[in-house]
Amino acid sequence: MDGERMLSTMQKFFTVLGGMGSLATESYVRLLNKRTPTKKDQDYLDYIVVNHATIPDRSTYILDHNAEDPTPSLVEDIKQQSLLKPAFFVLICNSAHYFYDDMQKATDIPILHMPKIAIEEIKHIKPTAKRVGLIGTPGTIKVGIYNKFIEENGYELIKPTQEIIEATEDLIFNDIKKKGQVDAAKYHALLQQMIEQQKCDIVVLGCTELSLAQEQAPDHNYPIVDAQSIIVDKSIKMGLALRQTTIDN
Image 1 (tube, helix red, strand yellow):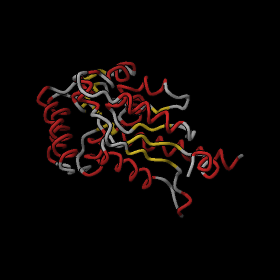
Image 2: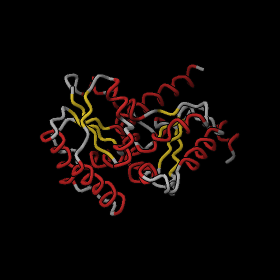
Image 3: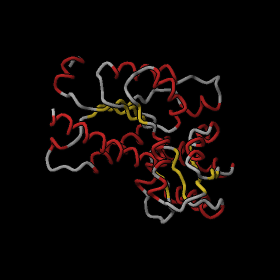
Image 4: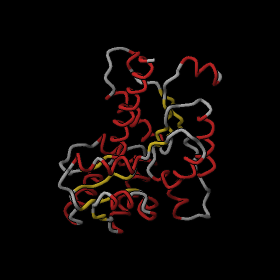
């Protein structure tokens, strides 16, 4: 099906830029469909998923600019999908937001900024929060993808210790990306250390693999900001609004 024909059959849709990694993208789609209010097939949202799994690792490049640069692949995906004219883009990778400005410059179509949107939700999740902890890939922690938004919203940023960074990296890369499984005990231990040792009021899951861990191992009482879960709800809200626009027109 060419772009013109697709536009004629699916006028109001959005594009999900995924594959970073694929299991996290699958989690996003699963939650998106589960939470969308439906009674029949036609009630689900119209969207395209780009599972570009071969994009070079974002955290590796952030930590070492001698590594393969994912920017060209990310920008090319934006340019290709923009030809289909989606209403907006969803970027399912926290570390990929390091390249957000280059991606947004490549299109007039808005790209939802997951870290920014997630931090804005803290006031609803835990209004009394002051000390906001962050866990994610080493690249996300190093370059401060979340730092600006945490501090601009008046919170104190609490970074993970080197021990917690290494334990988080082990869960993300060795368990989830490599083995395709979530170690619930490891995930819960990370949250426990951030809340009890680092004295955080709430912990931001700054990696979509951690969001997958939350989906599969939610049996804990630690207050969290699940960035991917939040962007799922934002996608549904905007997707349903697109459908209403279509009806009104």
